[in-house]
Length: 378
Ligand code: GLU
Image 1 (cartoon, rainbow, N blue to C red):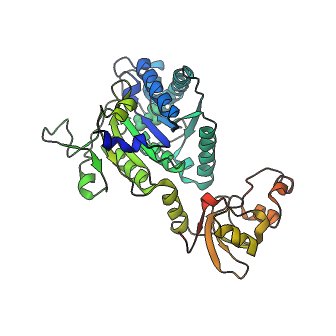
Image 2: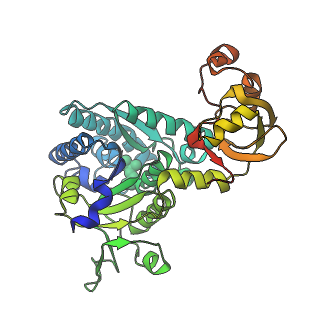
Image 3: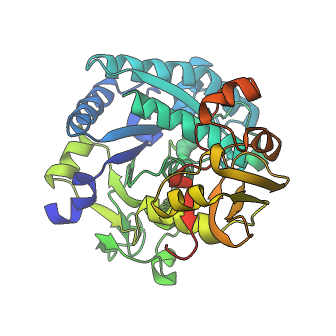
């Protein structure tokens, strides 16, 4: 069994999604503090092994409903939003307290669907989470339920967690919920249902196994989990569906004492991202570069403003552009770190002058090498 859990033992950047049913007691509506503390122990263990961990946690609505006296009744959207507002503050505090026992700082990030879809929001969220992880702080992420209206909300944290994993180039995503993985049919209904330990491809047969199983407390079902798997796998991220009901769910997975279903990505996050840059985006401009910059690019370096001789087109920060030599021959594609107006201002200048020229300090590179794909090489 241990071999099947390999992606977790080789993870470098991990996103763990925590379902409401784990964190909040269904009967009393109270936080299961012992469970959360055990999870915090697991996270510390992973971090000691050098794994960067971000958490996507549900539970704000489940916690908030008790606080607002909305007990067992069915809530309208506005009530859910109010419950989320009351619950989120408690949720964040609970994580802060649990991680502080290990001297680990946490930071809260609330995202909407738009933040993961609109490029500039996406890039900002990406760099914030990235910066937090590099500063050894644990991001605790949830949907910003209070502003997300019905049409424009995820509503489930399974897909949100997968988009976060993709956004931050995580190599592993674990969805902890009240089910231990994928079955050929809903095991609650069909006694013949058999467990599937590993999925290499999301075939129509696999998708058909999802049915519409739902748990009581959270919002996700197997359908949203398989949608999450698709997002993760396309981003080069392995994903597990695992039961988190017992204490120390992550340690149990690592030891092989709990089973889970692994959805195996065939690529890795860096390669998947480069593929997306190379083929998935319509370029909105051209940047021409001098011979020195061409050499630097061929050696795998970033593109600095000093090597830029001309900027063509109208683009925003984060848009895809074509990089060409002085004669106009396309050499690479990349995501540009400045909009076209600012790119024209800094073109031909040293990176050290950027602050003075623009009045703000952006990146040293006009296209970072992680955001650059050479056309004939990769
Ligand atoms: N964002 C919701 C909450 O924190 C949970 C969504 C879900 O259950 O997946 O309560």
